[in-house]
Length: 176
Image (tube, rainbow, N blue to C red; front, side, top):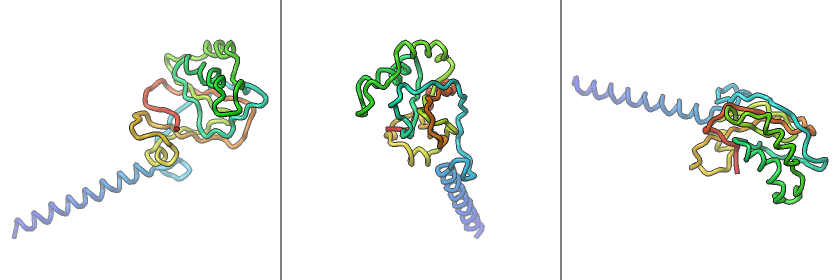
């Protein structure tokens, strides 16, 4: 009879451990933004500079993401070269002057920071949780870096904003 009580006690403990583990995993997976009173991973960022949009006709306000810049070459690509290809249609020739971008490069420190370029809206928050990643990210799950989900101000401006975060290989913008 004593063995039966031990067996029941161990089964009860195992069942309780499984229940607690499931609850903790569920809470972590569905952690939401601060608006929903759940904790999530917030990535600190710092405003660096605002620049005028590249042309009067330029409209990047509908983009739901940002450009993640790790080095000088990526800055030149996203602000100049990408617009030479005309993808998506209608933006050919709307990029920045290469000399302007080279001068901007001199103001940025790519050894210590990665930079985020946000078009015509201010960045309010950068967050990560598995739930947000699944809901807002269209990239495959083989990508090791975590997508930082932005929260933008609703006001549309005529400026482009540059923010910085500490240099790392952990994060990326949401895709595709």
